[in-house]
Image 1: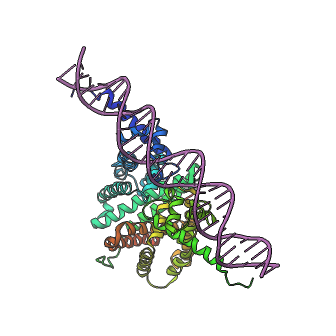
Image 2: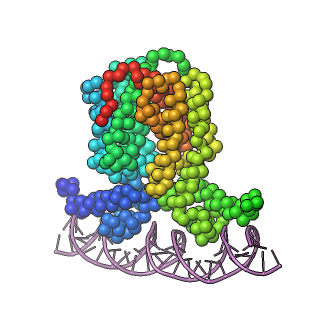
Image 3: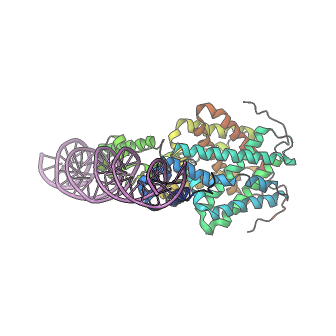
Length: 213
Length: 213
DNA sequence: CACTTGAGAGTACGACTGTTCACTGACTTG
DNA sequence: CAAGTCAGTGAACAGTCGTACTCTCAAGTG
């Protein structure tokens, strides 16, 4: 009860992280469903059997990678949206935020984009759950703004999801474009966001049509 | 020169199609980079060596599947957009068009969504090329409309890409939702499209900011 | 201090992979 | 009708895979 962490558990976590890092590196050029257990352990410098001490499956490892990639991003978008400034400034800040994160951890974002619709069920579900949380957070942040007066909760969630989907698309496009095409992709992303924001401002101009199915 | 097709080549095409069909079936629950050559031939009812008579790689088979899935869709979107009717009607028609195609050939769309960012380079590039063509076609169709007066070609392409990306997202969401959640997904897709269209109508309201990088 | 725990090593297993080679036999061609 | 083409067969190759064992020996425990 008194020990800080324990030398033993520290080493175990170190190996676990080595497995995660090795897997992330290998996943840059292939997808999770083709990632071999032995392949990961070879790259991590441990024996295949050691893998089982940390993960049951490569699928379980994938779920852990989802947590590592997206877990620390929560609250960040809400914080950016909560900052003051005109809508054009906030729009630029949002795109810059994505560019910075993608630039700092490209492998994580590539993994998310690749496995969002990939062949491993549990991983797909883990990513979907995280993105849904993001959409809810964005919707909550948007609800605080005066522009959202009169919006239904359902429509706010729709808009939040729209923003989140575009962040994923933008991140993926940035990775595909490489350093050279970054500026162009960022420009398109900004204009897309501006167009969506314009639509948002005129969403309640006419109440001409009911949405009940 | 006189023969219609030749019994021999007919049979060859039949086997080729059997390989494509078998692969598409297997790809419903895994991704292309983990698809084995033997696995495909086993499902198609031929020997592994016969595979090489039709494709060099499983990657080449993937590229052929992209062509099969998207090749026949060109021109369709432009046709829908070219029809008359108010914007709300056309919006409904677009969503219905997606729903119908996804319902008819779910495996094809699942494959496209999965491999769009998948681990096989040539297939990714083939899909990207096809989607770029779609975006250009949509942009060309939009350019014909009076609402596009004053739009730059660059902005039209941005908007076309936005619509195409949302079609892919909607198709993927429909597949994930299953028959039960179809109505809800379609409703969200319609509202998203409506919001984008609203933004489009107010895009040129103020010329307040230059886009030069 | 003796005793337990558990992360990782080492070995071995059967199953499966992509690719090669020589082959058959139905179709095509001159 | 004879000669040639070629889609598909069947056997064999060297690898890789996931998993089940036993074993070791440093860290934690009372």
